[in-house]
Image (cartoon, rainbow, N blue to C red; front, side, top):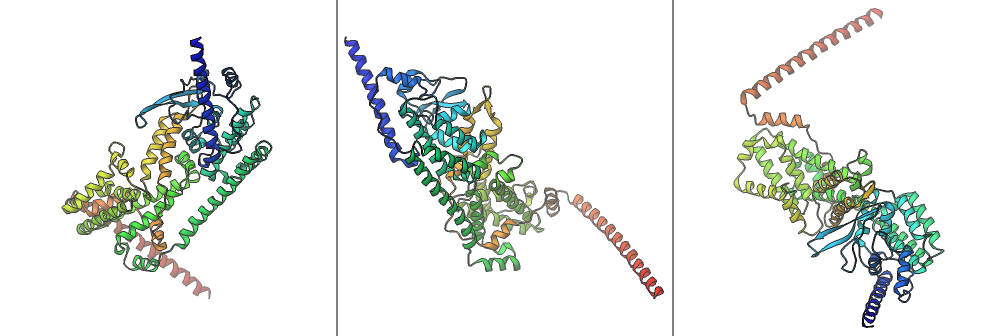
Length: 541
């Protein structure tokens, strides 16, 4: 009898805990719009007996592949984003595989993380009525284009919203709330997906269907869509108007300096500001979907902003190299090297690490680095400053020093994009898209989502800098040299073997003299032909 009473108290405690979990979840559904959990929820029904709870589990309201005890205790807990001490082990099934990940920062392991699954099971986890997992949802929405399409995703959500197998009203309603929450988060955080006409039509069809079952939620989602659409349009308009209208009064002066005196007479700080503003505009325009497809064949179309970021990096670093190797006199090369060191330090004060790496990459090219006499005569102060910059941006241990420094600063900033692209390439090429007989490798997507998440973290614009159109145009049209040509220039201005370079000049001179002789012969022949034609005309006249 005593044991029966103890079991009864334990059962009542579990039921009370489950009900409290439901109430807490419903409170979040009503009040935390940022979580995107939905609307139109009535208070939960009274706690059922354990047998009723078991029947609910058998009705399909729990994730398959988990134990019954776990199903009863999982209400309102984050199953994929972190560990839950009340949850039992997540059991693998043919269409879903779980894993446990050590998280030293949290001081406990993360259990129940989906390692691989079918699209159906991923959407099931995304909208599950008993598991709230914001981290999973964010990773899914950031990377879903790598394993499905927007239209396929919305179709899967429609199926989850209107299940045919469930009969429990409270289970159906709770699941619908989750679907509404996902739709809300999708529109608020990734509205650029809805710029596609087909997806908008599918969404409108979905909302019309929703009005018959959850009219309040349908109205709320329409308002979310309209508000997100207005916000997206305003952002795009603000970007265009800021680029067009925010012109500095210094434009005429800068244009005149470029035309009459050359870029070297421009203030170093002004160059750094214009580099930073231009690169920040490109960086802030990068969309998550570009990070999925930037290395594909049609990357110029699929990832236009990342492609532009790469082109500008190569353009500026190539220009730095060209400027260095085309200075004939050693003193001029040393002065220019000092100027570029000053420029990197100015860029660092503005947290433009991408610009710093552009300059450093140009200096560290083989054509410039072979100019040993130039670097040897750089004074001690500039040498130390240059070494400090190289230490910060060194690729040793996967840019360890740079990463630590970046994580300590506050935006706005322009991170070195090459680090992120290297990480994305490593994760993409080093991990298969599917595993375990065709299941979507979601562990790979989680890793990619972490990189995209950090990219977005630093997408903050420089509001205090003014655009100088003439300098922007100059930066976008810098002249570079082919690598072979740059190396030839380098060998000429600072030859390793004087006799060899003299012989090369003699050969070049002989070649030029030969070409001149050929041109003179052609010109003489042309003159004779003209004289003959004139003679014919006179004879005919």
